[in-house]
Length: 393
Image 1 (cartoon, rainbow, N blue to C red):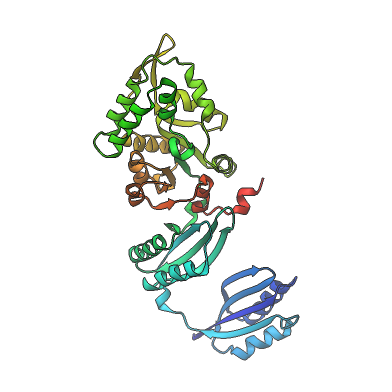
Image 2: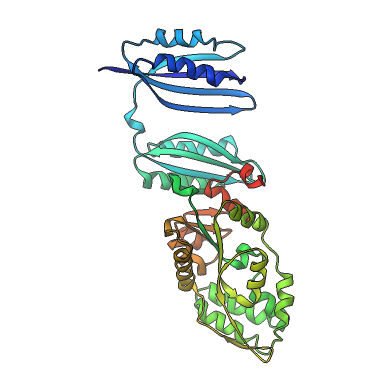
């Protein structure tokens, strides 16, 4: 039987009961075998746009739909109801992706550039949600298109040129399932580098810094550079570890991130090239139960300058993430890894969502998403969690 599809759009000042009036009218239109195909609504500062799509027998005309709307007396108090017959557009076929945009402020010029990039990939935006407007601006777009690779490439390039942080992910209910969120410690969860603080206590900060520079230049791998730096700590009184822990500064937003993850049933974890002796007491206070880090060898209350267990290096971090995922009972697709250095690349690559946090370019190249703002709780927006949800107690 031939069918016709009508899009009914109600717009104007929002008022109590307008939704009920619209759906009563649409129920009347569809009572003889038609169906309500889709619904969408947005209200911004009291201005309403409410849409309903109905598919009916083609014996039902546009005038019939208008009469149903008039019967419900919707066109009053400044509200206008518009009826239009529509034809399904095959150009809009394809899967959906979630494109999350984040910056200190996102202006119309930046959104224009992003939307032109979406169009260049023959894709279209179906929905926009403003997840946050402070301390950063964050929008989540539901984008439909056939060629996801072309879409990722187009929006990523434009976002970088326009100073916008970006995440592109598959859409689906998995985003609200339980997640394991694994963070690096130094320069991610923490503002500090623990080895540097220990070196200051041992009066060997300059020597440690030189070894770190060699590692960053690729002249030493992480494991060898760590052994050399720890060797310089030989003879340091173990009581200094408590003093260093007291000096540690959490990254802005870290407590908010952890509190929100716990409240929503997600599991936080830390996988670090740092040291258990410094990190474990702090993480216990923060109710983080999963930690993988290196252990310092301590004999007679002094650091020996050696490590007491296998080194948690780049590959070890990825293995720890996989082990924690198995223990928590979540698939790798529902894991998130956050880090800043080359030592984090493997775990960022293994995770379902890898986030480079104020990271070096080489790390950003391997990540699914990048953050250049100083707030660690911005990670939550890439999980689709709004500022309102974050602030709900």
